[in-house]
Length: 252
Image (cartoon, rainbow, N blue to C red; front, side, top):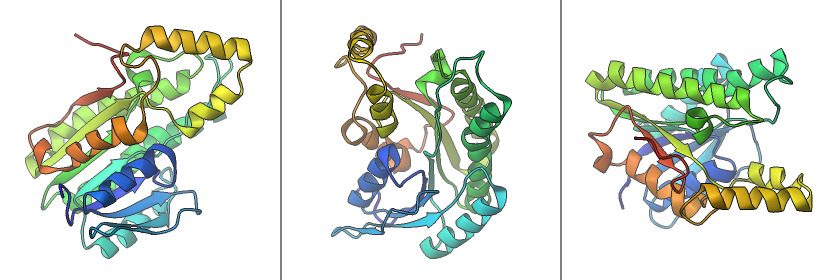
């Protein structure tokens, strides 16, 4: 097992991508605390020694983050890895975004990254660790209809590169992933489309993504990369943005 005994916090672990990551870590023997505003997730156990339990946390709130990290690291006995997967991605064109909508997206996606990363740093700076932030293909290439989301994820990329430099001397790696993965949120978006719109959308995605012509699978395409980034094989990888997008964005 690649992550046997590793002490890991995953934000946004109750469903979708986060839940797939939690399951992959359990399978590799890790001890995981899932932090989420969703209270429905039950503790998960596995036969191989890995386990996961859940706690409530609003990553946009400093007091909630500090309390959750204190409880989680107390239960884990420390912290080796943080995966910050929690985020929101509402739809609105740039001219329609209200100030409240802008601030809400930045509160969760950007302030949440700041608060959780800082909380992890305080618990890792003596012994090192791994921090994995969720950016997005939208944060690299933009995304019409989600300008506030794209901007918030662009900020996550800049933050990640900066703290990778600052925290590297403490043995902490900080990387970001920019996934293009099929999620429950994407299912909801597809459900809102008419039959004609859906056909046009699928044709566009097929032209955009060389590998498979559609968004990737969280379990098969994303989770193994997160296992790598949490493990010893990534000890010399930091400040990077890994594009897990089937070739949708190729940067020279």
